[in-house]
Image 1 (cartoon, helix red, strand yellow):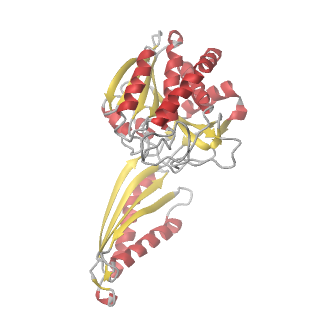
Image 2 (cartoon, rainbow, N blue to C red):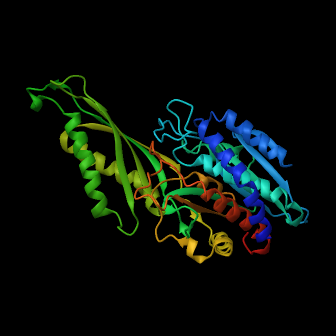
Image 3 (cartoon, one colour):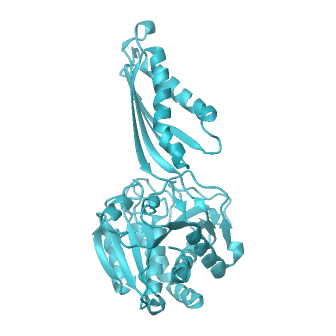
Length: 395
């Protein structure tokens, strides 16, 4: 099976590069992936898959039925949306949409999903069960997976696999992580309510800006002394709004940020911990406050058996020297975790870094580029892992 998959991938390589460049040139933002979805549906239909459009608003499902009698369904998820970033790569196939760019590699993810579907469709008679391809919208706003699930994308799914590019890994290599791969990501809003006054008489007012600065400093200091250092928490305030004039003491400040964590128990305690600190600071200086904590997506926790499946597939396909077991997780977030509430799964990292360049730009950078040779690595790894799925104990 592996030799057949590699042969088919080699023949498809020019077409896959063409697909990726088309997608890169025509990026669409979260929830607006109409042209992308239509393109994906067309490729899947031409490969003989049963296609369902409009899943999760702008998502697409393609189903490939093997000839066997197994009722186990393997899902393969890739995401399609781009970011509101003005591209500065200078590529011939750079984004044609002003202010929109595939700066997170979702064009590569979609291409890997399509390539896997194209190859497995030619080997369907060797598949004992069904493969369900999920082309998801709106990952960048962490909503698309929930939309897809609501529309039945995970119905009867036995297991799910995913992929995400990683520029810090050399192109053509595969990164695997057992257990936690990404962090839970939650949204935080803190409102400090003081009393306005003249800038020349601060003692007659309650300075919301100064108190907000104390809140930020205290939260950052408290993390290192009240949270378990073996269970990391990252709290970042990225937006501050307050004040009306340079000589007027502000009576209201809004802080907005993100909170990242890896352990469910730690995450569950964070809202109360944050509110206690905010309350203590505000009470000390006579201010009122509001704390709004919204849980976002949970941590991606890779299933052990499915990660073993990916590792064996990658090592057999490319050799152990091109496969890395990653020593630590990322504190970035991924709504692939939403699917894991419905079936075990595993996501692997696809190396897209250029070996000959001293610097590879990170994800979400306007000059982010990928080594396109990695596309074949991703397609073969995913297709071969899928072909091996029914011979494993993963469930």
